[in-house]
Every structure is written in C-alpha cells, then in structure tokens.
Length: 361
Image 1 (tube, rainbow, N blue to C red):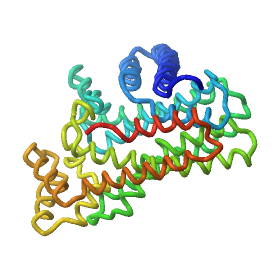
Image 2 (tube, rainbow, N blue to C red):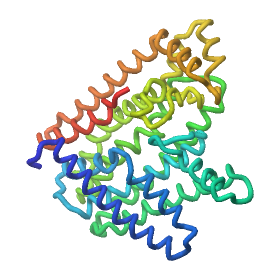
Image 3 (cartoon, one colour):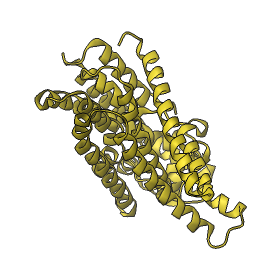
Image 4 (tube, rainbow, N blue to C red):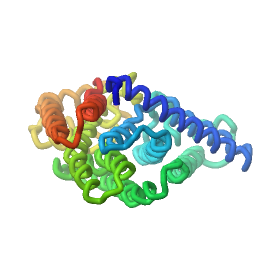
C-alpha cells in the first residue's frame, strides 16, 4: 500500500459505500416488486445505512486482509462491506430495546415508523406498529448481511473459511446484547460484568472479529492464519474495549451534534456501563442519593443530567475511564510491533485505532 493511511482509508470508505449503494439499489427494486407498501421500508433502510456511519468494521476487516498478505480486491471490499448490514441490525434492535428516540440526529427506526403510522392515520397502536417494523427491518438487515457476503464474488474457499468465524461473531453479538439487557435488570453494579458486556456487545464485533474475518479471507494455511489471528486478538480485544469505553463517555458527556443522540441519553436510559459502575464504586452517600434520584429517569431534564455528570466527574470515574482507554489503546498498539505486520499495514491499523478511540466529546 503506497498511499498515506488517511488517503487509503478514504479510498476504501468510498468503495465500501459504493458497494452498499449498489446492493441496496438491487434490494430496493426487489422489495418494490413484491409490493408498493414495502417502498417506505426500503427507503428507511437506505437512509439508515447510507446517510451516516464511519464504516469502521469493514475498514478493520480490509486492513487486516491487506496486513495478512491479501492483494487489493474489489470482491473482498464487497464481502467486508456486508458488516455494515450486521451493524444496522444491531443498531435498529438496540434502539428499540433501549427505547431510544434518535439515531444520528434522526428518529430511530421504531420511532420513524410510529410517525408514519400517525401521519397515514393507520388503525391500531402506533408504538406496536413501530416496534414490530423495527424488529422485522433489523432481521432483514441480518439476512442481507449474509446474502451480500455470499454473493460478494470471493472464492468458494475463502467464503468457507470465513463462515465459521462469521457465525461466531454474530453469536457473540447476540450474547452481548442479552448480557446488556440482563445487566439493566439487576439492582447491583459491577465493573467486571460491565467490562464483559463492553467486550461482547461492542468490542469483539466492532474490531477483533472484523480483523479475524480479514485474516480468514486472506490466508488459506491454518498455521499461518493462527499467527495473524493471535496478533489481531492482542490488538483488537483491548482496542475494542477502549472503543466501547469511549462510547460510554460519549453517551454521558458527548455533544448531541456529534453523537446524534440527546445529551445524557445513557443516563436517561439507565445504562449500566463501566463508567457508571466505577461511579458507584467511588460515590459517597450524598452522591449515591443523586444517582438514585436521577439515574434512569425517562423524563430526565438538563438539570438532572448536569447533576449526574457532576457526580461522575467528582468521583474521578470519568478520569479513570479516560486513563483506562489510554492504557488499553497502548496495549493494543504494542501488538502491531510484530515482524509479520509491515510498516504500511502498521500505519493503516494505527490510523484506524486513532479514528476509533479519538472521537470527540
């Protein structure tokens, strides 16, 4: 790879976007042929997928593919672009489970179809209509992710190598989603449990498993493949956890114009993140009272958000999470020092790590 990493990533991102656009155009036509009632469904998914997103998962997968000796290949770009459809499934369902109103400064999918129900003056419950549609659209995105991978044009051997890993990634994602739901139902908090959820709900399928997918697409020899899988676990696991910890901070302190969600949305939803577990561990009786009063209140206003932010900062939890992000990132980058990772691949992966972690509050 002769390009500077920023320029190379920009080029890969454009190509990923092109494949997603082409694939969704085909599926939009297919849905429209079934019935005109499905046109709003196709339009909603097109907007959800194509109007935003950093394309981190396919970029990590393609960077690992190149680092493991793969040659630039548009079929592989199309294969890894399918990860965006898996991400769409996760986000649509996650917003429904969290009762989130917005995603990327737009109504979340279930709210979007609630609005359609109201605008078209349909009968029945708007919330049930919205929730049911979101479930189906998330499932559809999951099916499409498989279809796009299978029809990507990669070799049969590469596809077969990738399928076991691809299945494991999806199982881990669903397991992490359940652990997250279960954690919200518990009355206690635990840093260890929250870190485990961060690993499985987001970290592994955002970074480690896409890296592994790229390795499977590039390398046929099992022994050589294991070398790169081990390197990318050492790189991807701590980086994935740091990525989720950054999300935890953004969910509390993030600027809505950057995050696409209301200020303090995680506080309103009562998300039991690592940040909140650390806050509980450090809070005194007065601070625990503030948490009990405001945390998880669905109608939490700016005063309540500010009160909780103050407690989180005053306990030192925010600073501790920032320190942990820094340590995890350094641990991840150390893994790229292996001889198997050449200079250009090192630069590309380091730049991706920076994009994943240095997101602004």
